[in-house]
Length: 148
Image 1 (tube, helix red, strand yellow):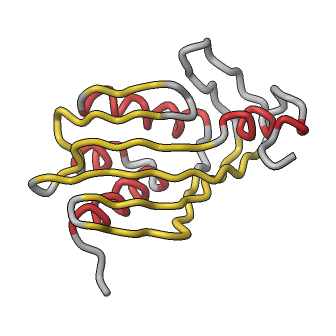
Image 2 (image 1 turned 180 degrees about the horizontal axis):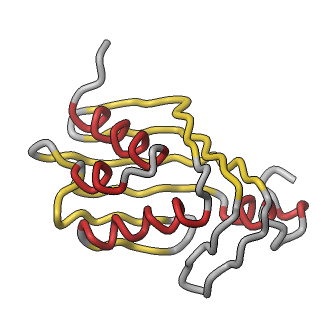
Image 3 (image 1 turned 90 degrees about the vertical axis):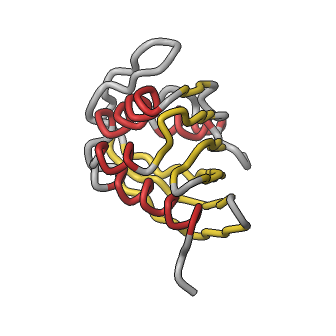
């Protein structure tokens, strides 16, 4: 069954991020999008903040790739399970201060849920274990990862 609506838009955003195409990514969202990065404790209000938020990951992980392992749609909403991979060779900007490049590779599983209206994403949230990300970057002991 072909993807439609919110699922198609979510796939487009994830593919655009992997391609480092921030213009394509921004074109899929409403100018007033509200997005929350629950794992990182941040919110993006509007297309420009959303684009900047996503751009930070492209800058920090220039080889960033994402593999969608599950994608489910229900009406105006879509949910995806994703595995993000990359090498931390650029600064990772975050509210607590920039994390300088560590040269370490990451593999982080996350879930994202979005809602679409009138052919654009209007809001969303992503969930991941930030301790796992920080452990993989060498900033927390490996024992801090979920499931340990």
